[in-house]
Amino acid sequence: MKDRSNMVKVAVVGGEGIGPEVTAQSHRILNWFAAKRGVPVTLREAQYGLIPYLSTGKVLPEDTVEAMDEADAILWGATGGPETKEVPAAARKAGSLLSLRRKYDLYANLRPIVASPALAGSAPLKAEVLKDVDFVIIRELTSGIYFGEPRGIETLADGQRRGFNTEQYTTSQIRRVARAAFELARTRRNSVCSVDKANVLETSVVWREEVIALHKEEFSDVELTHLYVDNAAMQIVREPRQFDVMVTGNIFGDILSDCAAMASGSLGMLPSASLGPVDRFGRRKALYEPVHGSAPDIAGKGIANPLGSILSVAMMLRATLNRPEDADLLEKAVQTALAAGARTADIAEPGATRLSTVEMGDAVLSALDRVAGREREHA
Figure 1 (cartoon, helix red, strand yellow):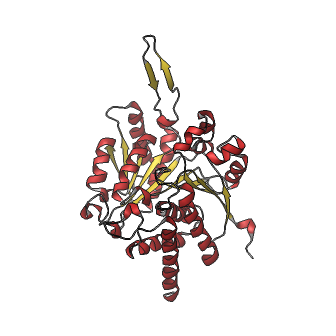
Figure 2: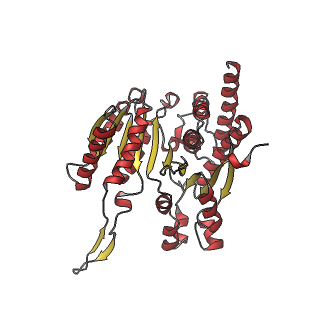
């Protein structure tokens, strides 16, 4: 019997739209690793969104808050969709994903961009552009224009309406996310590209100067380059293989990471990890989620791609559970399933058989059994 005192606690929050559908498959994957590989994890399901609001008046009910507060990691689905109209704006804001990022100080968002050779035929970019693409975008997640004050909407004296937001960054906010990028680069190909708009924005001038200073002080062994955000967007679709680790601010990272989905075949393929600071015990709060949104147009149809959520579990295995071999195993199983022709609608070539969300989960679980079996044979 497992010692539950050593178990890693994971709150599973499916949320809204297709979130519960894709997260259900990730839940199955985590159960497989617990049963077949002895991964010390205990899972607690919790609700978010319209359903709990209708019964409790909160999109984040107390039970869900408790589950997330106690958890070492949160496996998140999605938020948003038509149902947001049925929840007052104040209640929605109080339980928003932005508020959770701030509460847990999840300042570093990691989004791996890996092009699968098996998806070359259905990817929107040419196969030669996608060859050997493997980079990570690190987006600063708790500062910048999404959190800056003042912000609001006002009516001017002449009757016009004006909306305003504040973009701002401090030395410490810049340096901690840049440090995360440099440290990650040392485990990869030792190259960081910092993205800003320093030719226009004072915020970006400070960003670039602080990144350069930190590099000189602590990370001179890592190659550092700089791009303006407009050029970075072009380079991501022109020659994405040139990047190793890209670090940028909140709004630029939001846009560039969705742009980079084109270098992986589909937005449904992209995982992410949002990491907080390391505490005195060496632990850090983390939230794992697919990059795609709630996709209300296909919610409830059972056709959503769960691979972004499943690959987020691989990130959890690596970063929270410290099981890099198991993370590698899961990533290999996903590629094995894709190589065998497993496709959901968003990544299917013309004429290809399209799997449901559950069937894609089945395909990955079957591939896990096969890949793990081969590894045992060669051990």
